Length: 203
Image (cartoon, rainbow, N blue to C red):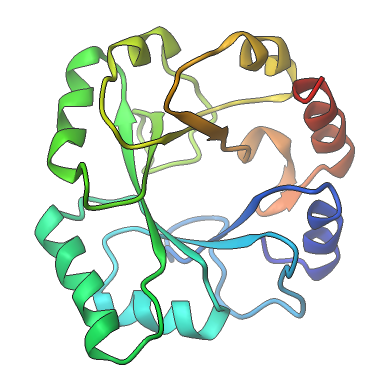
């Protein structure tokens, strides 16, 4: 999200979290602070193999509530990241999401070293790009996820998937990530599509 009016309109849909991508290679890259930032939902900063200093600076500049790590960040890196907030005198460490690209049951194994270290997992689709491929993976794979960490379902969820979302059940699934298939252009959301979809899945 980058456009102030679009941010306001999405926030008015009573969403829970709103994402801001701080990966320079993304077409949705937020290079400067928008004229408006949401106050009624949590702010999520998305990073890909960024330095601890860079992430910490964005947390401060954007008052981020949650940090999403979408690269190859190791458990050791995450522990160091968390310690750095304490060492620098922050009142709190932001909640953490670790994203994983999933295609098969075997891919779920990579989540195990992160159990108890981050607050949430995000399961995205394996593809040529780090994220935003607009494609779905086979959600039935997640029946084999038996970890303790709650997760977000991501990867190519679009306006025609409301029935599938309502039919998807997993005790650890706490929400869904909506992005590229609800855009009119990168970082610009189609408010009508979002509004109708949210209405359908909340029936």
